[in-house]
Image (cartoon, rainbow, N blue to C red; front, side):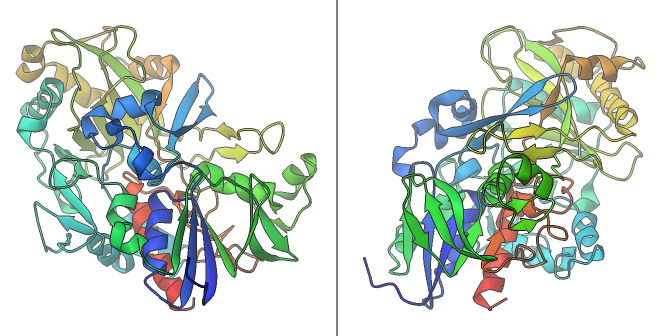
Length: 492
């Protein structure tokens, strides 16, 4: 190992954001970067990680995953997060949606200078090499993440039935669902895959062999961080599960929207009353874990007659809807079931995008236990907005494409009835897996993602989002990590 020189930065978590941070910070040879990941390196990945068609295999236990339950009024939703280099980018649906311009303009309007749409759009573009659009007003052609849209010949029968049936039912076909000017409408998810169609995690994209060989970058996998070493109000390093202590000039927590707040609270940074109840000394009284957001919604189960696997294959069609006709506020698409037993072949999931509800992340019965996660409640107008989604779903069921597909409702009921949404919700809500906002800029962090009232401590992952974007959050984490790394290298 080369002699350590320069300011030492320790990154906790080698997932979606952590891999980006490690790559970008180590470009500066005046910095010494240590990346700590609780799970294994890519060499230990099961082959299912790299095959997008086998993503459900990863969810069902063949990959290292942190499993947590998020509790709603009616059910407990399993929350899966990748525990390996690449993190959740190694087990997610690969969808590279960005949300809408007004999402980020809302961040800036709340006082977070530098986070408006015009501030972040170039970062989104710079992160990607779009194999369909290339260099374009909304896309880039030279970033580390290769992006393309699934072709028709890669789509399953059920996915094609949804795409064609929604167009038949009057929905606009959208070539680029990352272009707000083309919405609402039906299109296909853009995804991060390489030229051979394999999953491209952020660790593969940002930490190739040439980057790993940098003398100022150390990557340590299977290294579980259990707490921060805090001196006064300064983060002086981290403490590993084996008792080892690593000193640092700055600590950046990138452990995800559930585990970043847990690490802060275990170290005395969080709501004073909650910490006191757990016998933890309060270092900084901050509302950590008090504003958890997610995209939630009901699923309507269907059976695909014929060969099992109506949603088999990685390709996903997606209807982006607007319950008032113009303002995008929900996603509707087929997803694979959470388990392989039973008759459900796929669910048509309707996820609300704009939600004012706030859930929580709290320490478990002991600080070492899994956190207690409470789902955000549906917004007051959620039922009305979901009825619009169900009306579109009912129109799909009336299409020739649906009738010819062999798809049939598993629980037949009239989707247009006033109680259709409440019946579906009573069966249980589904999470889109977009947990955000548990350490938000504005109340826990400043606009540079530094923990308020602390020195040498930042959080950089989905937990920093002050409000949840109107779309998938994966690419938003990449964008945030890119921008914060740039700020850190500039001395901010």
